[in-house]
Length: 179
Image (cartoon, rainbow, N blue to C red):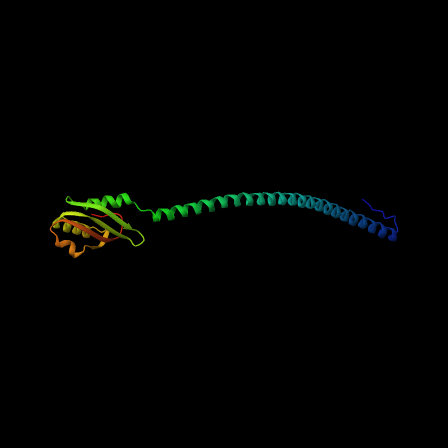
């Protein structure tokens, strides 16, 4: 096919420039439209993210207040447990102590008084012994047991043979006797 060029060169150049202008204008329009669409989407996303951020911040504040109440309760429980532990540390099982002490007292020994001073950890046993042998047996039994140490029996107590009033002192080591 034969091509005829009936337009003059200046109009041909103008026509080419016009087409180039239309193409550039279309490309710029498409870019601007896409930019507007993208900026609209980004602006919408920003609004959504700000709304979610505010919700999360509100929830975090509520959670912090809720946790603060729980932490206060936990701290109160911890204080109560500490107080109970302190009470348990100071607790003395006197029944066990007296049971163990009684197991060391044989026939012929009659206690009239037991004095216990926990601040000094001292015990004083006051009573009557039928005879000297029973009293010496009591002293030996107490010395063999490890819940009382430093057993002291005045020497003048051993001068009598029968119906001996005695006072034995000792230091409390622990409340049970490991036999």
